[in-house]
Image 1 (spheres, helix red, strand yellow):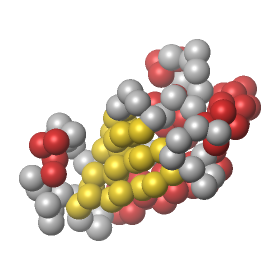
Image 2 (cartoon, rainbow, N blue to C red; image 1 turned 90 degrees about the vertical axis):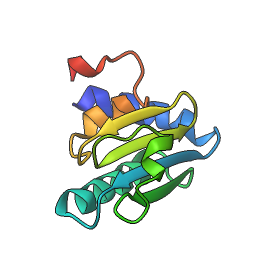
Image 3 (cartoon, rainbow, N blue to C red; image 1 turned 30 degrees about the vertical axis):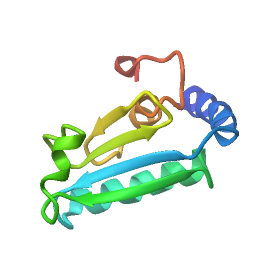
Image 4 (cartoon, rainbow, N blue to C red; image 1 turned 135 degrees about the vertical axis):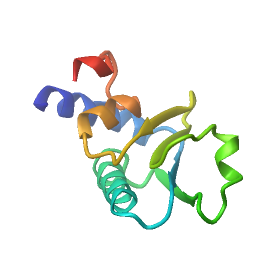
Length: 114
């Protein structure tokens, strides 16, 4: 984990010099899993891409039609719109290593190696 975190912090310095990260978190109401996913996402963003991100939370109970655009089939789902390519991560985002790899903050490490 330490090696992964060091690599993520190194890559986050590069990310800070790039465009704003656009992240969409799809949830289905204010469930414990949804609240946990948002808290975990916020913590990761504050640590690794501080000041260079925008989170949009989309509640599919209020706007179910919005799931179609990003092909959402389960919640919570995080979609990284920018920087491209689009990336998706399912679940409550509690596995920080998996989220760092999924967001591509750590390069050269395959998700199945974490």
